[in-house]
Image (cartoon, rainbow, N blue to C red; front, side):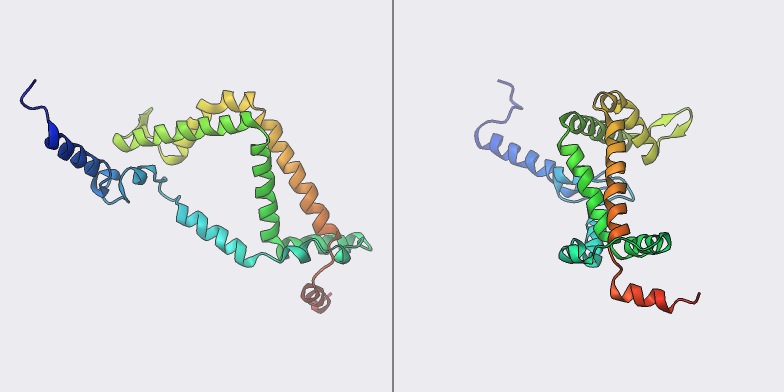
Length: 207
C-alpha cells in the first residue's frame, strides 16, 4: 500500500477536513465572500436574489385587498354606460393591482403544474442557464469578441431549450395564460363597483 494513503483515524481526519473545505464559505463563492458552502454555489446572478423576490412579494401582500371583498357578489353590477365601464376598469386595476398580480401568478402556476412537458422544458432551461452561468464564473465566456452577460446567457439557455418548449406547446400555454388573465381581470374590473373612496374621488374631479 502506498505510504501516502490515509489509514484508520488519519482517513477519518482527512475526510472531515475535505468536508470542511467543501462546505467552507471561502471556497463556496467565486469571490470568496459567499454564503455557507455548497448551498452558496446556488447563488443567483447579479441583480437577482431571493431577498429581492421575497421583498417584492411582501410588498404585494401588504397592499392586497381582502379577498372576501374582492369576490363579494353584492358589489358587482352591470355598468350603466361605456364611460362608467372605462372608469371602473381604470380605478379597479389601480385598487386591486396586487390581487390581479396574484391571480396572474396563480394562472401561470396552474398552467405549469397541469403540463408535465412544460415542467420538463422549464427544468431544461434552468439547468442550461445554471451550467452556462457556472462556466462564466470559472472563465469569461466570449462569443464573437463579446463577453456573454447574464441576459445573453439566458438567451443562450433559451435557444438550447427551445426545442423542448416547442414540443411542450409553450406558445399555446402563453396564449392561454394571457387570454385567461385578460378575461378574469377584465371581467372583474368591469363589473366590480368602485370602492366608496374611489367613487367620491371621481365625483370631486373637475369636468
